[in-house]
Amino acid sequence: MFAPRRLKIGLSACFQHADPSRSLFTGKTLQYVEQSIAHWIMSAGAMVVMVPCPTGETARGDVTLAHYAEWLDGVVMHGGADVWPGSYGEEPLREEWLGDRVRDLYDLAVVEAFAQAGKPIFGVCRGLQLINVAFGGALYQDIETQHPGAQQHRNARTYDQHFHEIDLVPGSRLAHLYPGQRRVTVNSIHHQGIKRLAPGFVVEAVSHPDGIPEAIRRSPLRGQGYIAATQWHPEFHVQGSHTLDDTALLHDFLGACSAARFRPFPAVSPLHIRDRAARLLRQALLRDVFTTENTIGRLIGKRK
Image (cartoon, rainbow, N blue to C red; front, side, top):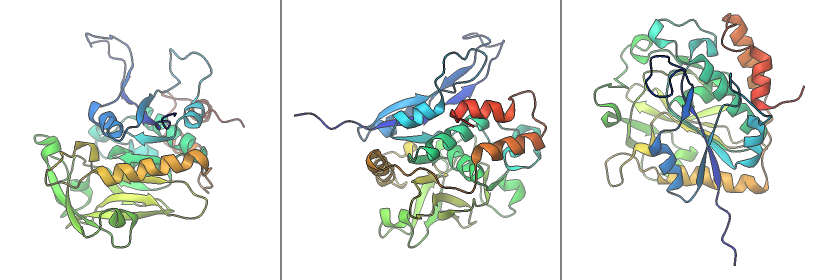
């Protein structure tokens, strides 16, 4: 008898850009994943593959993100750096909130490629923010500055040991995954957050008591694929601790990946992520990092 084929799950890359002062890999761009999120996905028996950015000064060959989206069963959008405010049409309020424009373009292209292939997408922390921006939403550049009265959502000293409570929205898919648990505790490691929800998405959890969206999901309309995300890091949960258990979230996502093997949902959306990214980049006069439409087109492997 043959063992069932294991799921192959993509994990978006984090970036360390070329740094001439770095003692290792001097002047080279590094793409990497954080260990615990890979182990989280692997804990359910899935195989994890980092999805590298196929463009850059050292690019060779014709492999695109569309090839990865076709081959893999789903993708998890990694946490990490701030989202550049220009990605949602705003000017940065402070220099330290510039984010990573190059990674934004890469992440937007990953979301576009997997959405067009009808493969499930799950976002973590920055991944939630990026998904919201990709589909037309906007962010608080800094919750403490722009949302008076909000609680602390990030503590640089305690990092993943900083927690707060969230309320699950009654009737949501997330509430269904955690029956009888209306208010739960999660880690909190972000200073940006959703200011305007993307069209076609619903909020499934909000922070207590300030009401910042903490989990979102694409509205379950017929013919649309699975896209969900959390503002907290489920991979940082320690079994037996007081924070929300991550198991149901992971199994929900992987269940969608298994189903999409046999009947993927090619994206039907009024918003073309690639076109939106190109338009916003032109508005922000971003000319030196990427060449807008052509670069994004090469990333996702689309043919005009």
